[in-house]
Image (tube, rainbow, N blue to C red; front, top):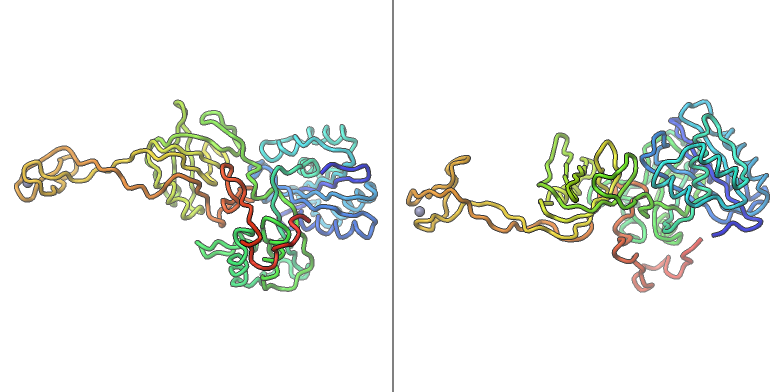
Length: 435
Ligand code: ZN
């Protein structure tokens, strides 16, 4: 969507703090205040940026509002709101406010989600576009605010965020657990990650003191609203349906073993070098290689059942590993098995003399026949029956990063699922698919 002559974009970032304010809430409130001030908000965007960026806010979320009206008024309203609510005395809270009437470079967004940007680069992009901007504290929030205002999504999903009444902030949330499971069961795969069915866990209700009551993620505004209607919860103050780059893998770039950079996220092709090992705490280490280079991949304990997939890999399997490169290893978010190697397991051989099955004669001592006493040094090698097959495997919803594309949306090699109306339950069918 191009910025029209009378259209402009507002970017907002880094208004969070330990006290729990959240940038999306501030954006939702700003949208409410813009309308009576004569600005029409055309689109509300929740923009996730590089999840490994140092100094990132929790979840590294920024917001952008696409609006028509007077940009000067919008800028004053946005700054006033930040000054009213953001804890500006908190050292880790450095908000940024941007209002751009001319297009900012999309490449700045792309770098902010896949790589790292500096405050100076943000300021240069803003000055080049003649944008209004204000950075508070050390100005770091200008990076996310600029990226959000510059963003164009190659792929998109929606999240309906429900915000609590201010009087309830910091108190325990009341969201009926069973209603969340019902909503997911009735709308999956058109919505996802409200709950984790395999791990019997609620995923969409935060535990932090911020204003979010819960959020429903899905493929269209109609689907997330349909699922939200099924959720039984405490009275809420505000709801906003955000269009977002969540669930799109916008953070992943192709990478090669031996050529990865810290704090970026990659999809890396390689051959499994050895049988994965499980270490202390249940963390699984997988070693893959490509042309003499080696890459350690980690499936940490919170990835739960995904670790069983990693443990089932064998030397020679060809895979693509996806995840964030941190402290010299790739933290797996998902993987694709392209080809399984012929894996073999040893078992006691039949007796060379009488044919009966032998038993082990002790570690390193070969095998011995209990019937006739004959010995043999060679085990029988049989093909291992593999527990996994080619295809994609992912971490469960409890361990999923915001940007990671869930497999229920299809994969890079499969086209995105496009459900026909007859596949849909009553309700969202026939509803508009765009806001
Ligand atoms: Zn024998």
